[in-house]
Every structure is written in C-alpha cells, then in structure tokens.
Image: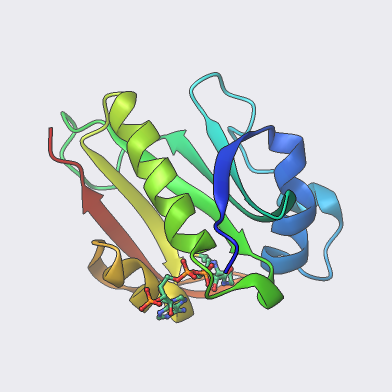
Length: 150
Ligand SMILES: CC(C)(COP(=O)(O)OP(=O)(O)OC[C@H]1O[C@@H](n2cnc3c(N)ncnc32)[C@H](O)[C@@H]1OP(=O)(O)O)[C@@H](O)C(=O)NCCC(=O)NCCS
C-alpha cells in the first residue's frame, strides 16, 4: 500500500478538504478558522501518490480551564477524504502535529473531538476531560488532551 507523506501546507490549501468533510453544504469561507494566519499556526497535508488527501492544523491556545503555566496547542480541522481512510493518513497527521507542537514548546496538545472520532484519538494517546458537549451545527464533542513529555 502507498505510504502517506505529510508536509506543511498553507491555510488556503486546507480549505477544500476541510469544507467538504467538516462543513459540508457550507461555502468555503465556513472552513476558515480564526487564527489560520497567525505566525505560530501550522497546517499539514497528507499526500498519497502526490495527491492531498488529508489535512490538520495546530494553533497556539491554552487548554480551556487548564493549568495556566502549561503551553497548549489546539489540534483542529482534522479530515481525511472518505475513500482514503484507513491508510494511516490520520495517524500520520496527528504525529506531525504532535512533533511540531513539541518543537514550539508545547506541554500538551488538545482538541474538541467529534464524538465519532473519540476512539481514533484515544488510540493515539489522547484522553477525554469533562463531559460531552454540543457545538451548534456540528454536533456532539468531547475535549481530549495529549500531554507532551519533555
Ligand atoms: C478521524 C479520521 C481523521 C481518521 O483518519 P484515517 O486516515 O482513517 O486514520 P488512520 O488510517 O490513520 O487510522 C489509524 C487507526 O485509527 C483507527 N480509526 C480511524 N478512525 C477511527 C474512528 N473514528 N474510531 C475508531 N478508530 C478509528 C483506524 O482503524 C486505524 O487503526 P489501526 O491502526 O488499528 O489500523 C477520519 O476518519 C476522518 O476524516 N473522519 C471524518 C472527520 C472527523 O471526524 N475528523 C475529526 C474531527 S475531531
């Protein structure tokens, strides 16, 4: 099976996949996230056979309600094309984000995981905190954290 290759991409390159998978039925602007253009934000793409098939981004942001001294990064906009799932793109993107957050001094990586994706994140070291909550127009989520050991 073709190995996936992860590399940094621009915010603009994330939009078509983000929009199709995470904001279906909405215009592309709905897939632009606050902070996309901040200098310490990073966007990653996963390529199979040279084609972009998955995206994920990290943003410097403290864990809501977390310990203030901890440097946090939020993982957002994680999406892999449906026909390309199960080939390792998702895990490769998580690992690239984890490595980058660590290199930017993060103590932890956190995300608001769609409830359907909780098991995916759990398999890759994240754990849930708090209770399930709803994000209007998107659906049920759990906050999940991955501590990054120095
Ligand atoms: C979640 C998602 C990014 C995973 O991408 P993927 O490329 O299929 O993931 P991988 O191929 O790297 O999967 C790695 C492992 O996690 C497992 N896995 C993937 N999605 C899973 C899920 N939703 N629940 C449980 N396990 C899952 C895979 O079976 C695989 O297990 P294995 O290592 O035993 O083979 C993808 O399913 C997706 O885009 N979903 C829709 C959007 C979404 O929910 N994004 C997350 C928003 S918070």
